[in-house]
Length: 411
Image (cartoon, rainbow, N blue to C red; front, side, top):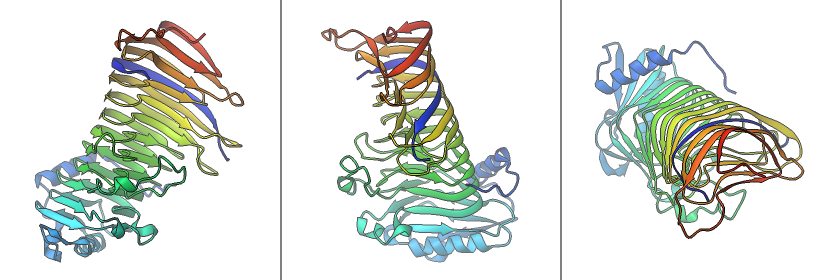
C-alpha cells in the first residue's frame, strides 16, 4: 500500500480493455444562463413570470414524521404540467418521504426549477424499497429535458441501518441499495448547492443523460459505508462536475461504460476510494469510455488516488483519452493504479507512507502497453522500520519513462 501526501499528478491514460463487445439532445443548452437562473432561484430573485408550486400547498407536512411522498409527487406533477415557467419549492422544515419518481416529460417553456431548502429524509426501513425496479432508488428524475435542482437543502438517505445488508463485498452480482438520487434520461440539467448525507447506496447516479452539470455539492457518508459512491456515471455524455466536496465510503467519482466527455474539476475527495474509471467489462456489450478529464482536485486519506479497474472478458471495447492532471494528494494509499489496461502518467510529486506508490497490474494474456510515466516525484514518509525498497510495481506492463522518477522505474 502506498500513501501519498502533497502529490501533484498529471496522468494521461489511453486504454484498450477487454469486454464483450443515449442520450438525446433536444436543443441548445446554455449552462451559464441556467446557472444564473439557479442562483437567482436560491436568492429568491426570480421574476413574476415564474409560478411557484410549494409542497406545503399540496399537503406535505414539515414535521419529519408524516410521509409526504404523494404530496411531493403531486407538487411535481403540477409544476411539470404547467404550460409556463414553473418552480417547485421545498421550503425549510423537516420532510419524510419514501421512494418517489419525478416523471417527465414536462411542458414548461424553460427549465423546470426545483428549489430545495428543507431537510428531506428517506424512510429508513428497507421494505419501502422492495416494490420492484421503480422503487430501487430513493428520488428518481426521469425523462426530463431542462431541469434545475438548486438550494441549500439536505437529502438524508438514513442509510446506516441498511449498510449491514450490503453484500457486494461477497457477491459480484449483488443487489445494490437505493441511491439518494437517480437521474435517468435527464438532459440539459444543473444540480447546484444541495447536500446528500448517508445514502443507502450511491449518493448520485447519472445514467443516459446529456449536458449535465453537478456544481457546489456536498456529499457525505462514513469512510466505511459500503458502496456509497459519490457520483456514479454511465451511458452519459457532456457531464461536468465542479466545486464539490465528497467524503464517502467508495469512489468519490466513478465513471463506467458509456461515459463520454466527462469533466471533474476542483473536487475535494476524502475519505473514499478516489477517482475511478470502471469497473469496465462487467457486462455484455458495454459502450466505450472516451474523453475523461479529472483536474485541479485534491484527495486526502483515500484508499486510492486515480484508478482504472476492469474485468477480463472475451472481446474488445475501448477506453481512450483519459486525463488525470494537477491533483494534490495527502496520505493516499495506491496513488496510481491501472489494472490490465494501457496508460500514460505525467508530472506526479508528493510523499508516500508505504513503499509501493505506483502499480500497474496487468494480465499475461492482455499486457499493458503504451504506458508513459512523466516526472513522477513521490517521497516515502511511512514507518522508518519498513526496510522494503521504495518502488513501483509493474506486472505484464510495458512502460516508458521521461524525466524524474521517484520511486524508481519498474525493472
